[in-house]
Structure formats: structure tokens, C-alpha cells
View 1 (spheres, protein in one colour):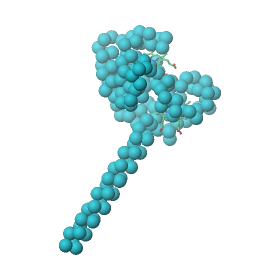
View 2: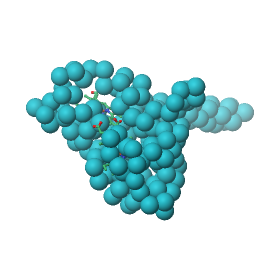
View 3: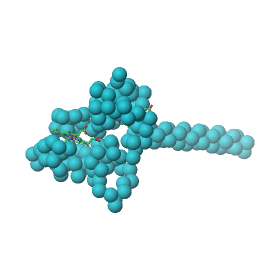
View 4: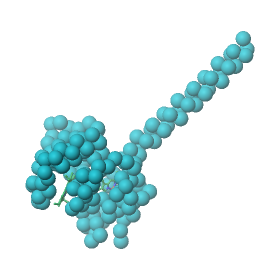
Amino acid sequence: MSFNANKFTRMFFVAVLVTGTAMSVARVSDARAEGQKSAVSDPKWKSECGACHFAYPPRFLPAESWRAIMTGLDKHFGSNAGLDAESANEITAFLEKNASTKKHDTTMKPLLRITETSWFKSEHREVAASTWKLPKVKSPANCVACHTKAESGDFDEDNVRIPK
Ligand code: HEC
Ligand code: HEC
């Protein structure tokens, strides 16, 4: 009997340990999800949406925002970014599949800018107004100016360098 009880105790502690570790891993990845490296890519998206600016990773906007962007490409922030239907469909599917799944206020028109989302403003609240206007930054939309590894999808705070 005492052997069985011992075995049970040991199993119980192993189970607690494993569960505890899994939970803290989940919490860390929640907190870091925004900065984490994203492996997703698509050749059409990379070439077409990276032609004028850095190809913004899909996880930074919800699907409805990407849909709104993709249906208005001929009038895209003052530029004509129009595409043939086949490319547009491929890119829309890629963006929607990898979009942010955060709850979105459906009474609002979908935001077209990552830089207008509340998480963006909150993550960048310590960036001074003058920093956004530096000649090497020019616009908050110029992610690569400060996120040195953004091209590979890595926005981790450890890889942020504000240009001089
Ligand atoms: C012809 C040039 C051009 C092409 C091609 C282009 N864009 Fe843009 N895009 C712009 C300009 C200009 C802005 C405004 C940049 C700024 O405010 O600094 C912009 C801004 C954006 C923004 C908002 C950035 C922010 O958060 O402020 C998103 C999102 C975006 N583009 C997505 C796309 C996607 C998706 C594609 C591919 C289907 C694409 N763009 C292709 C010119 C282009
Ligand atoms: C002027 C420089 C600058 C620009 C431009 C910029 N960021 Fe940042 N970003 C920062 C700083 C500084 C932080 C905060 C780092 C910290 O907390 O130590 C940050 C934090 C972040 C984080 C959270 C990282 C983490 O590990 O928690 C994300 C995600 C992010 N930025 C995405 C973007 C995206 C997407 C763009 C472009 C649309 C962008 N940033 C443009 C400077 C910039």
C-alpha cells in the first residue's frame, strides 16, 4: 500500500509540474505574441505589397481590415496599388488566413492602418512625437526604420533600434 501511495504522490507532483510549466509558457507567449517572429509569407504578397513599403505582416490587422484594404487598392493612401484579380484574390486569401483574431469593434468601420490600432498606440506610447518625425523614420508606418528584423517578421523589443 505504501508503495502505491508513493507512486501516486510522485505522479501527482509530475503532473503539477508539467501543467504549471505549460501554463507559464502559454502566458509568456500571450504577452510576447505581438513581437514574435512570424514565419508566414507568400511570394505574391511579398513582391506586390512590399513594392512601395515594407510588406506589413498580416497578424497586425483583423481580416475585415485586410478585406477593406484589398477592395480599395486603386485608391490606396493616395496611391494606385491596383492589382489583377488573380493576384488580388491570392493575396486576400493569404492576409485573411493569417490575420489578427483579436476582438474587433464591429460598430466601427474597419481600420485601414496598423498605426491607428489601439495596440499599436499602446506599444509605442513611449516613442516621442519628435522621434516619428526623424528624417530616417518619417512615418510610424515605416516599421523597418526601428524594427531591425521586421523583414523576417521579428518585432521583438530586443531588436528595436531608434535611428539617430
Ligand atoms: C503603389 C505603392 C503601394 C503599393 C503597391 C502598396 N501600398 Fe500600401 N501604402 C502605400 C502608401 C503611400 C501608404 C501610406 C504610407 C504612410 O502613411 O507612411 C501605404 C500604407 C499602407 C498601410 C497602412 C500602414 C499604417 O499602418 O499606417 C497598409 C496596411 C498597407 N499599405 C497595405 C498594403 C497592402 C496589403 C498592399 C498589397 C496589396 C500594399 N499596401 C501595396 C503605397 C502602396
Ligand atoms: C520610431 C521607431 C519605431 C517605428 C517606426 C515602429 N516601431 Fe514598433 N516599437 C518601437 C519601440 C521603441 C517599441 C517598444 C519597445 C519596448 O517596449 O522596449 C516598439 C514595440 C513594438 C511592438 C511590440 C514588441 C514587443 O516585443 O512587445 C510591436 C509588435 C511593434 N512595435 C510593431 C510595429 C509595427 C508593425 C510598425 C510599423 C507599422 C512599428 N512597430 C513601427 C519603435 C518603433
